[in-house]
Image 1 (spheres, rainbow, N blue to C red):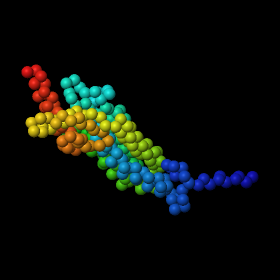
Image 2: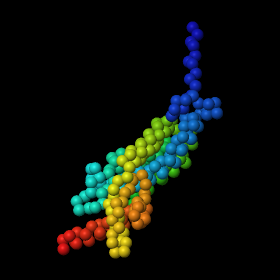
Image 3: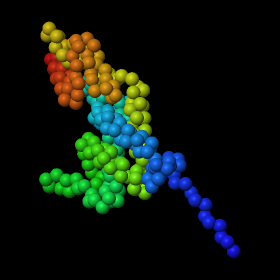
Image 4: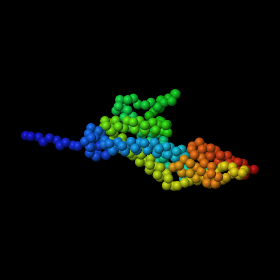
Length: 241
C-alpha cells in the first residue's frame, strides 16, 4: 500500500515565526529580526548609560526620597527596576549569559573576569565596563548566530525584553518629574546663593536657575554635595554659637 509522503513544512524564522524568504533559506532567523536586534543592541548602550547614571543618583536614597538626618540634600527617589538593571544580576549578567552560550557554540573559551589577585565568578562583574563589551561581542557575532545558531530565537527575545525593560524603567523614572536636591551652595558677594536646585535621573545636568552655576557629571555632583555639606556645617556652627 502506498504511504503518503510527509508534507513539507516551509522554514520559519526562529524569532518571529514568519516564513523565510527563499533568499533566507538555511538561516535561523529572517533578516528583519537580525536588523532589529542589531538596532536594539546599539540602543542598549545609550539606555544602559542612562540607567547607570540614574542608579548612581539613587543609591543610598531613603524611601520617598527623604533626606538623611542633618542633610539638606535629598537624593532622587529610588526605583527598584533601575537599580536591579544596573547591578550585578541585571543587564550585564543577562547579556553575559547570551555571550557565554554563543562562545560555547563557537567552540571558544569563556572570558575570565579577574584582577591581579582573583578570578571572579561569572555573575560578579563591573556592569559599567562589561555592558559595552558584551554589546560589542553580540553585535559582531549576530550575523553568525542568525545564520547558524539553533537557539538564537530565544536570545533575540531576551535582547528584545531587556531593551524594553530599560526603556520602561527610564520612562517610569521621568514620571515624577524633577525633584529637589538641596540648595545652591555658591557664594555670591559673600552670601550663599541658596536657590533650590532640582534634578531628574533622566538628565545628567544640575543647573542653578538663580546664579547659573552648573554641575554636569558624577564628579560635579560629588563636588556639589561636598559644598552643600560644608554650607550646612557652617550654618550648624552658627546656630550652636
